[in-house]
Length: 387
Image (cartoon, rainbow, N blue to C red; front, side, top):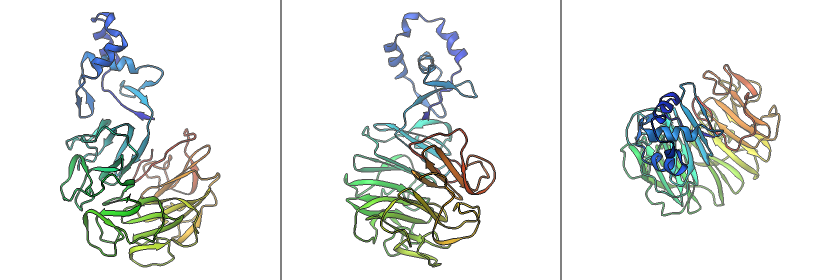
């Protein structure tokens, strides 16, 4: 569930409301006054309208956080974890982000970080069909178009420039034909018109177009023919599921492409070994990758922190079964040096736990249940936190 924090204490509001006519507490007035609020970085302005919103939210669907701030809880359609920020989509044209904002990655129109979820500026008021946060930028898919914001050092926003953007800008050349989007560390990929296209940094060939030239607008990936059911952008490599098979390209210093080769990089897609044509999901991260075939989970690449989940810290150049996962795998998310997966009864994580991004401190080379988390619909992680 999304948690919107409003920095108004209940005591301040109750004192103010005692001076108001109780007739103003009707739902219609609450809604009307709440709509007049002006959003400020990290808080909402302290007005009586804010007090009404506070009391309206202080119900069974809300709680107060450690600051004494009301936290209304609302359904979330999509959630995506970035480098040191997080974004969530809650309705048509409504995406909230919070965390680090040095490049404008929380899309609020300025570079001020926020501990509270704040709305993205510049998005159209249309349904959000996809959301993906990268290291310092994020993108959404809405009615076939793509909008991105944040860091744009290598053209990863796809608007034809190298200028960072503190609010959403439209990706060029999409023309309402996009169906999927994936933001990596410094590049972005999408399925546009049924074909894979990528843009941004291409030093290791992570755009998959056969060369190492950066691109500020989408370029075609030299992918095999077939329906693209998923794409995942890691730090310096990219993977996709095409006609049920897993394909990867880009950096391969740790064997994260999974083709069994120690080649430094691949500038066009190569087939991942031994997975067949029944791959349902793939997740690329910094230096390792995981994929799901039916209910089975496989990982490969760097394993310094046990992020492959196979009980040791040895590198794998090809997919290896995570046979210690106790349940059928429903979803996967790879972080910088850790991995998480959804099972029917909850979430399990393993690998680097320096910041408790696995749900506990310390490293683990086998899956461990995250305490207090039951069945989930969506799971996301990246550098050092998980949602």
